[in-house]
Image 1 (tube, one colour):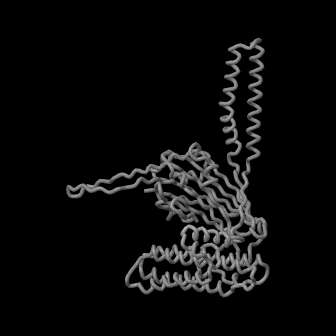
Image 2: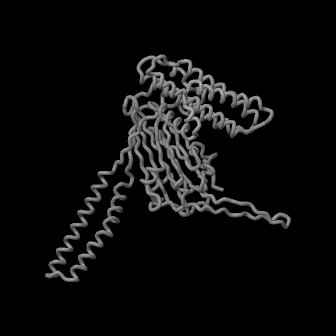
Image 3: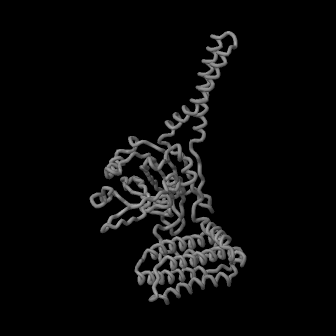
Length: 461
């Protein structure tokens, strides 16, 4: 369920069925030496800048042979129907190709790598031919097709060039490598023949890349649901602030009136007392408001996402988000027990951060051919690495009276417990150890899983 995304981020991708409710809780144990706390990183700042969530019509773990090619053949009917079917097809091809490219790159054996790459090339070529077989005759539909065909051709070429660049090389497989390169050249020539991109755009790497990002967003129209964000406690916060101000002002007025009755004339002493009273009001008003506010909102969701179909505008799902710093004693007992299974050397002073997501699907059914929604929740750990030390140390080793040394980097560890609940099913618990340095996540390791406790429970080494 949890996997690394980019250098300093990881994602969670659960599936959602019609009329279901799903809750995900994450409990982070952040070592104090990482300097992450409410003063250096507020919940609002993290949510607004380092957290993403979206829903899309998509099959989970989709691969190229599973792409529903029948969608692209539905070129009859309304304009929006054609566009949505076309976008669904292209979106699935893109995700499936990305997934298969990642798996193929991991093949270290040269023969398996090139066999897998050749099979991938054959499947991709077949899917592109199916797309081009159903070129629409209607002039109104042609721009949608050209945008999708242009982007998909470019993305396929870039994906295979990346595959060949990162994969193993061997003189024994020069023929297979040239065939893959020829496939890339053919797609490049195809786009030139169709005059999809101007010469000035092709000559500027930034322009062609930005254009393709725009086309990517266009093919996501109708597939990725539109998200509307609402801050749930804005009016409540104003009420709390106003109430605290009113109470403090009432108290100040009582003290001022008592002071005026004591001093019949305006004196330096009276002015000094009034100055002190108003100064204390300004000092304690913000502190009192903050304490009362944190007490009131503790355990309450702070944000709500509303997901709608970008074409029909129908409400599909809603998501409530919790994010707050907490203390160890407020964490559920079961989660505390899982954290307690850590090795003694890893039980250091830490800051505790709790995230929760509760998603409710309102739709009774999805688009034809789709039984589930794919939710993607992305967490960036970039702000966690902001205050990490850059310094590298040296490890000295003595071998036959000769001293050698190796450079070592400074690494940090986050412990995290994930709790997953789907409808009325029993909660599932997992604990991960996330190792990171200042520039990337080095490793994400599953330490505990309740599904197979005897095999998966370990103590940190």
